[in-house]
Length: 299
Ligand code: SF4
Image 1: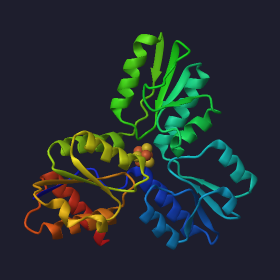
Image 2: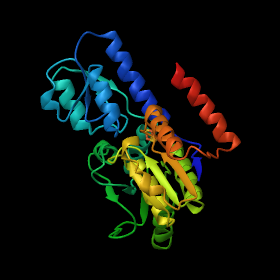
Image 3: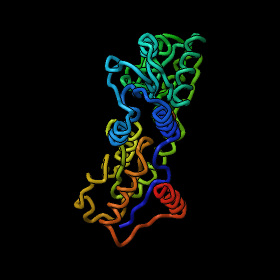
């Protein structure tokens, strides 16, 4: 059995940055440190942070004092207002790419475009983008149900969406409008991982996607792999792996979402190595990545 590892795995820079900020605040204060919602969509990381005294509050009403860290997805401005009213200390760890999407949406509205966000309506990132425009943009998941009323249309995209979806929406709109302004706010990290998973899935019997079940970017990777017809398992931890998955299987690939920590990836790789002690096929690039990880793990 061959095991191939995706080249781009582990935390993206936005998640690394948010966790670094949270740790920095924790080190520098004796006061309570909160995150509003889970800092990232990975329950194991959230649990680890709680043990370190960085606690996730589901709602601002749970927070009485101290620091509130705004997670990488950003928040609706009305939440920021409440934080200030409660005289809490706000620390903004919104990913700079999400900030850019928020700003672009505002810009399109100000320039008079009928503006749409392509994304998941309930996702915190999309909520923050819509909120930043005072609710003046509409959310669409693709072309279904898209009824434009203006000839001047603007588009921004949730950072975890696929380029294919954006292309479908643009192709649909082009013949219908006089003017279209598109800010492709899809995160490069996400699209690189999606492309890689698509390629790996084409050549694999099984794909194992590692990451939080509620993580949009991780679930999208699993979706892309399934669309390629590859038998796909989306797991959060190594203990979910079952030996029976590998009966009569020659090629297995492993990829992860942007909010999956290295230590979970390492556990998954170790478990796979135990199941398949005979042969692990890793190409030169991936050998380098593994080497880097080994160094990091040992620190
Ligand atoms: S996936 Fe991209 S947009 Fe999302 S937090 Fe990471 S770097 Fe930022």
